[in-house]
Length: 151
Image (cartoon, rainbow, N blue to C red; front, side, top):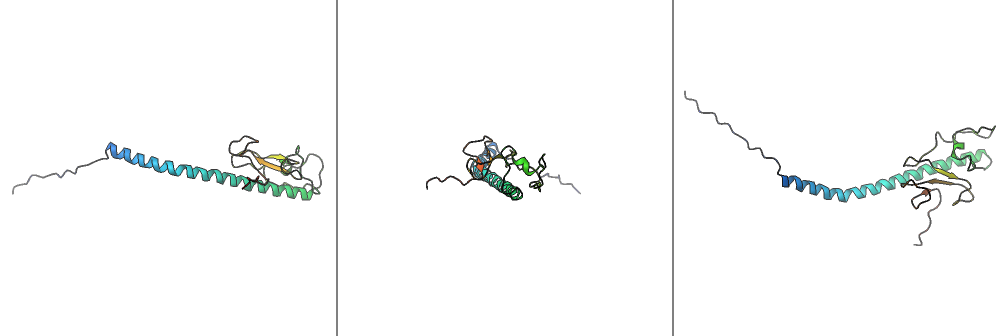
């Protein structure tokens, strides 16, 4: 019996060429340049909305404090700490804590509390410095009504 020589079938292995890899990277770059700004814009809006909800929670705690104290809100010097820590002086009206801990905005900064408020002179202002973390700028978020733009 004669043996036939064994033929090895070699499969040609072909990888991606440099041009193909660069083309795929270029397409991914174009897609990312279109998608990332939209996603990042939504992220900033979501953080602002979360901060507004936190402000609403602090407002509710301040109203509960005022109910216990005959309509009086904590003074500016007492600050929001009055919602968490019992007063050092004897205060039989204090039924807190009104918050478990001092609330922070979505960027990790504590809220500023102004009483009486500059924008709410009959009440109080609760203010987040916003995404730029700088107080008294256009991106501040607070418990006041947005100013009309004249539209």
